[in-house]
Image 1 (tube, rainbow, N blue to C red):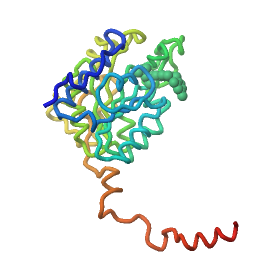
Image 2: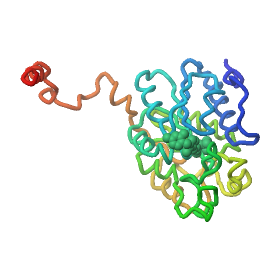
Image 3: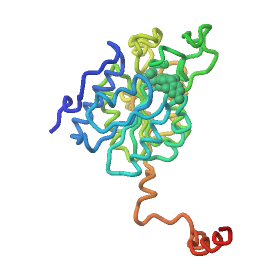
Image 4: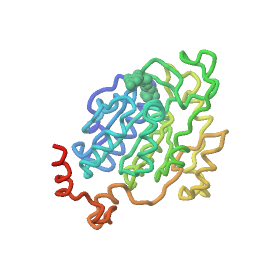
Amino acid sequence: MRKDKDYHLIEPTWCKGCGIYGVFAALKKVAAKLDLNPEQLVLVTGIGCHGRLNNYFRSYGFHALHGRTLPVASGIKLSNPSLSVLGVSGDGDAYSIGLGHFIHSLRRNINITYLVVDNRIYALTQGQTSPTSETGFVSVSTPYGSRELSLNGPKLALASGGSFIARGFSGDPKQLSTLIEKGMKHEGFALVEVLSPCVIHNKVNTYQWFKKNIYNLDDDSDYDPRDKKKAWKKLSQETKIPVGLIYVEKRPSYEDLVFRKEAEPIVSDDLRVDVPRLEKIMEKFR
Ligand SMILES: Cc1ncc(C[n+]2csc(CCOP(=O)(O)OP(=O)(O)O)c2C)c(N)n1
């Protein structure tokens, strides 16, 4: 049986107190609990402070371009479906430059677990306002306060056809590891957004702030994460932020539909390309 420390490759150099240490701890815990072979695991990260994670975690890794975590993770998974593929992005990587990929991955439902480490700021570039920063947020890029509405990732995920939507808090690595484990066992695309303080650049959304403003859906026995309408209602609440398993739905993964042996062909025989006929046509233009 492997242990958490077996996935600890080198000591991280993130700022002291950064929320991402909780994400690193949760990931190691899940990998050890599932006894995952590091050679069967691929961690794809984007550009940002979160992007260092694959340097510290023992597994295969790919540090992708900014916003391109999901296309790289999708390519790896589809070319070798036997691998466990995890994507890790920041709120900027996922919801700003990478937003198109986010929506298409949700509707496609490829078997990937996607962690979005949401510190509500662009941290690596020294603290600019991000899509999840609240209206009025003051930073070096919005010195008079942001004039934009903030983006709700899990709500967008639900509207985009997400089949597994969860939100954790890096201050609670135990619950976070349970959510990641469920996401990894889910057949299809699993989003786990992680509320995560940046202790250097974001002086608003601190550990205390998050603790005061979140509530745990996993403690509510009346809440059924299979109920889409309820999930939408919870995600639409403006006052407190729900964490826990928000929505889960059973639907075939992309791989299931595409690679299954008995999969129905999408085009009929007469619509398939007739290669000899095509060659003949091309010959005329040579
Ligand atoms: C194409 C491109 N545009 C902009 C940048 C500059 N850049 C680097 S990291 C980053 C934002 C990082 O924010 P986030 O994704 O939230 O990650 P964090 O640092 O907070 O973990 C930006 C804009 C870049 N590297 N590449």
